[in-house]
Image (cartoon, rainbow, N blue to C red; front, side):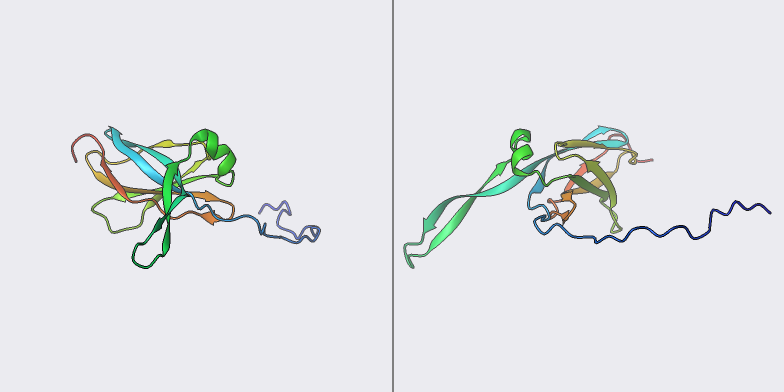
Length: 156
């Protein structure tokens, strides 16, 4: 029998208080999938943009004299994303075979400046459902709409 005493109780660490950053909020920017195309027999190229709602104007109802705030949705360019969405840390991409009711596989794409990813090691000739969300230390955004894309080749 061999023993090197590496499973003994060690010295106590200094006490610390873990505090949550109250100013940190989960991302409100929802990625929008702009393209999902077959790259080859086993990969799909996914591209996305991040949009933010910006108030643009009020619409007055002629009957009740009520006003409704209208939002205009604009894509964040990488330049604006660096200043306006500094809380983004990356993206989670979820995918599964379209014929499956099972759970999604998940890929983490670190970096707020990323806007595309190759989903690899897929099955040839299969349709996949794909969705994406952004994340930071405080949480995740809402999911994008689900899109479908099929790998090249024939099944089997």
